[in-house]
Length: 290
Image 1 (cartoon, rainbow, N blue to C red):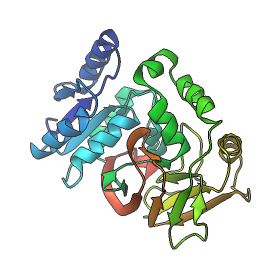
Image 2: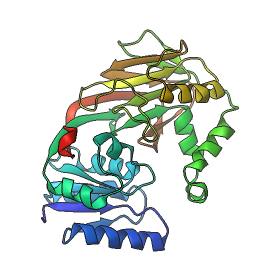
Image 3: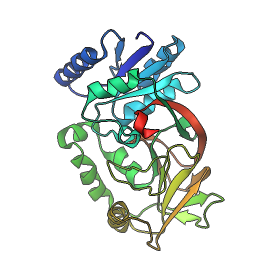
């Protein structure tokens, strides 16, 4: 089984980190486990593992770790495996992995069932599940690590409440797939889920070569937050102030400094060019999901 390398991001205090390392090592047997010591290290560790010829490179962490590992293995023949131990594991949910059973996830990695899924990018930076320009990226930007550790997922709501009173930015949209040219918030999905087990992008398929885009037109942040709930819990998007479309290419620009988040991590700001590589990523997935 030495064809597999595990990149572990314990992303917590020392005690917690030690616990995760011991737990992962007990599950993966003799496979090398490389532990990140600081943020953004998973990408470099994954790239090195790919260069060393490992055929399977496993992201043990949350969506942010998956994002880094993917950016490390792009261009190699390595397949991505997932051991979901992060606070948010939306991509693992999307693939139908048994989130609460790491042993079963490891069995899936050893089972060799490779699924080809789309590989989206924003300004050349790859992501797997989701991108946001505007509100949610601003929330990520203003939620510090210390704040996240104190309040967990609630920290994002607290930040969102502080941001909600502000004037949203003006975003300009270029795509042959929509007639809308101005928005105040844009969400781009590769899969169906956003923020958890919520099927936000109703028609998304993870291997159809298309982005699913939700544009919030000239709306204030409070209205957007209200609409977000509606979109999550309704079967389709019908509000006049929201546009939903699918596209292979999207460009978002603004005269303001508007941030971008990819898979829940801050990743630059406007202007942003979104492109998608159909079935460009090999993922070890449950057989039932193919």
